Amino acid sequence: MAYSFFTGAACGLLLLAAVRISIGHKRRDSRWLVVLLLGIFCYLLGPLLSDQDFHVRLLVSLPTILIPGTFWLFTHQLCSDQEAFPKWGWGIIAVGLAIDFASQLNLHHFFYLFAQPFKLGLIGAGLATLLQQLQSDLVAERRQLRIALLIAIGGYMLIVVCAEFLFSFLPTPAGIPTLHAVTATLLAFGACFWLLSLSPKALEDSLPPASHVPEIDEAPEKTLEPLDEPQRQLLVRLQDHMAAGGYRHTGLTIRELAEQLDAKEHVLRALINKHLGFRNFNEYLNQYRIDEASQRLADPDEAHLPVLSIALDIGYRSLSPFNAAFKRRHEKTPTEFRREALPS
Image 1 (cartoon, rainbow, N blue to C red):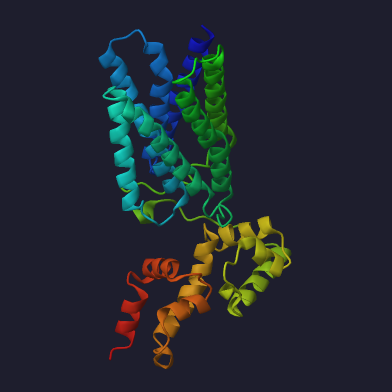
Image 2: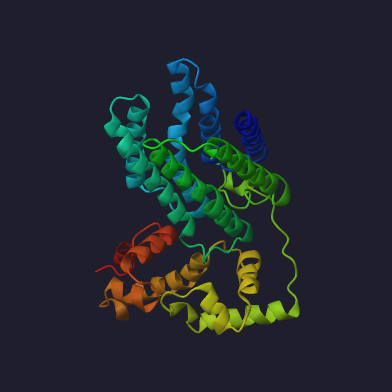
């Protein structure tokens, strides 16, 4: 009885969140989050239908196989402003879905044994995505969302998958299903209360715009708050430091930059985000680095230098991130840019 009550409460909260997000974020691409919420809803609903026909239970359980892969897709969408989801990632998700679907059909115990590690791997990939560039994220609401997802949702999903695998071979202790339902209810309530009440703009400020929304019509122009005197002084120090080549330091983080400027990290984050318009610290650095690289690649006196040497000189650890950042700016590789700027 307690299990049914708390499961029903969690399902109701998840449906409320899904509807609210779908209606309230029409201008944002929230599809993966909605699919994730509906998958969790079906997962919680499944045990209540244990006495139903096999085909009914299978139909309800099918959305649950989307949870691990959708979690990874949502975290990538949340954290990667400009990068497309990797093609190899789609392949891994497809293999995981096929194996999990085969295990749902009870084709062979072999599929279940492989489905669980795949689930753990996909959820782990989502957690790794949340951790990547957490330090360089300048959007305060999105940083909080990353931490909440990492600690609460993703961590609990890992625990559930491991517990399911363990209790498929051992007897389930009394009270575990109810504890699971209570925990799911608390997490759902916490997520709804935070996203819909405490921080309603967290998703809006974190998710990318929907593809059908014209870029020029995305949002009205924001009026920036005037800088006070300490902020103006910090802005001047920041610009002078960057103009002197401060961006060339390899592996520079915003924490290190704040120390170099003798400023508080959260103040510097807010300055770069709200007054300079950058959502990610690496993109802020890329502005200076790609500007210098473009000039040097078009300079006949530096035509003898390899592209890698220039990339290392301006602060990149390797050629791959430099190529990616350069192509986002110029829609061509550094080599192609140099070839056009310095015709032989």
